[in-house]
View 1 (spheres, rainbow, N blue to C red):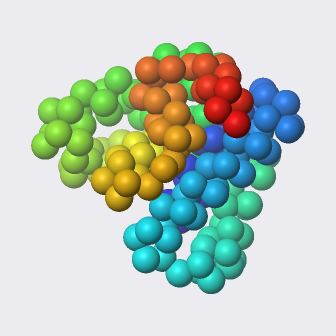
View 2 (cartoon, helix red, strand yellow):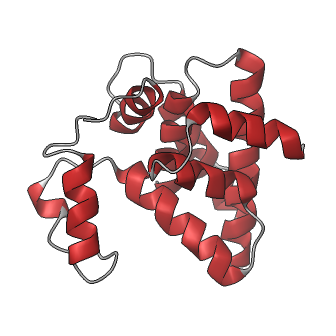
Length: 161
């Protein structure tokens, strides 16, 4: 379930990119997530089955606007500084910083949460801890943390390919 959230945000961020760009970056994020999951002992059969890849495909192909993660990515790509996350992204970031240096305990219950926002950052950190190379996931984390733009991420992605 966590991977679909990451790829949902990624899909939304790249909604306005070319189909080739969206496919290249989304596939690379999936590859990195599978590599990270393998380093954590995940079953490849589960990752490649209906509960893994099937769930991902359903989430990233959502055109009805029902995916909070895809919508979050789209609005972030549009430059929306007040992405609709209940009380807003700035509130969530402040709450995380004030609550045990990154813990989301107590925050999730009070806000409608875009899971991908938290999952991207957490998996990026896990990649560093496990010493697994996940550069595209790190760039995605930088975008949701607003340290780089989507356009900068795309440029960086193709510069290292």
